[in-house]
Image (cartoon, rainbow, N blue to C red):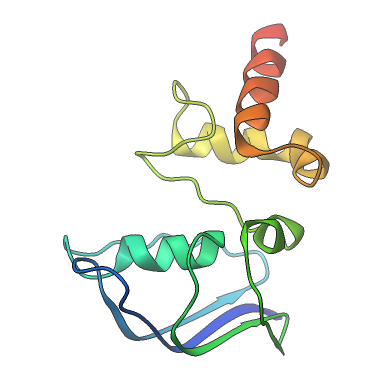
Length: 129
């Protein structure tokens, strides 16, 4: 399988809580990644890093086996990396699985719309269906 994302010894310590230290992660094509951890273990920070909301302070982030610099939310969308959690769904009344399915028809729209507009468009689309 082809590796699409890797975090090597990733650290982010800007926050007092949820400090991420020396985290390693590999994701391969076709995988859906489920990440779970205890409160304060850095999982939220890792999700923020993967979503492009926060930078790694140490370590490496590789996408499609290339080192990535200046990784922000628009870079995450470019590589079709989406944050869908039980607390922060794209469409609030859908389950995580339903939100994952909802991303498919609008994936090309990610570069044109910010999250709030995508929420509205997905909601309108689902209501029309």
